[in-house]
Length: 400
Ligand SMILES: [Zn+2]
Image (cartoon, rainbow, N blue to C red; front, side):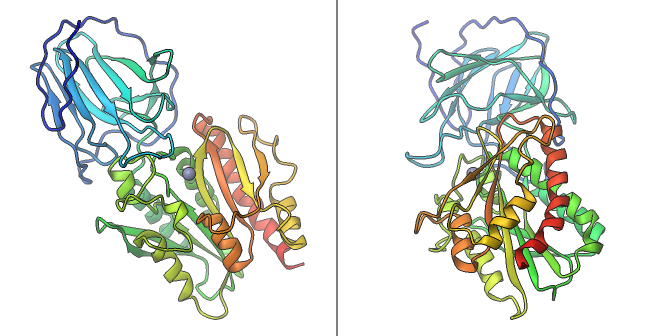
């Protein structure tokens, strides 16, 4: 009591306060990618260690949490954004731990500039993610986790890295024969990987974007299933081709950012200004399209509090309204476990979102596909697959 935790970024000073806690059993599982850091993608952080416990922030997706040791088996982590406020409250955290002995490990998360948002998830060695109990303070600023001895990775959501996206892209290429390419480089020099599915001279281009916002993992989960379904049907794309850029902000993802890219810019406010290499890469690729190829639709995958689609309001043309009705209309309750709403929003001039820019630049339907943070992962995937299939049937309505 009475000793304020002292946070340091590289190696922690043990304060050696007594720590005692009861282990709580994990709750029901959530589907997700394999958790164990592969070691192939370096993170940026360091470690925080006592004689029996090590916390590490050395893998893709782990922010450089400030860490204080408050006992032999007790730690506090500061969950802080990558740049000064204001910033969207998406308080991402991720760390791995190794604990000798049998007693649980207590990790307290202290949020700066936000309150608790993401239900913590734990993955053991090579295992899948499962939600774990969190003791949240009344003001939402402090969360205490009790972790079982052994080792595991804890994160705000399942960790899906640029390496995972590269695996998805390779699978889609195998399925479709589509060409993989780098559409550009991030600030950190990471390749922003993409695929074109369908004939390169097919006149109608569907653009699918993902992961502008690093913590928005449920959007990535839906996008993966959505593109899987399209890839399986690539032979039938006909006069449609699809550009898929699943990981537009790889630096932010690897560094565990809440919102921004490595340039401290919110990419989904940069469409139009194109001050950042990530957004500029997509715009340059579109500018270089042959004369006969033109975007007909853009869908940008994100996450928020509930499942919804942001679409054009009364600025949409009659053909675009027909397309919306054909694709999403009436399906809001069609998927068990994945109800969604359709939210018409006219563009705010100069807002810099991909949604607004594609609508203004190409006069095509331009939607934001928002998946709830807490969405049932299996239902989100199934709905995404079904919506991908119905998209192909709805596209011809844009011509009439
Ligand atoms: Zn977002």
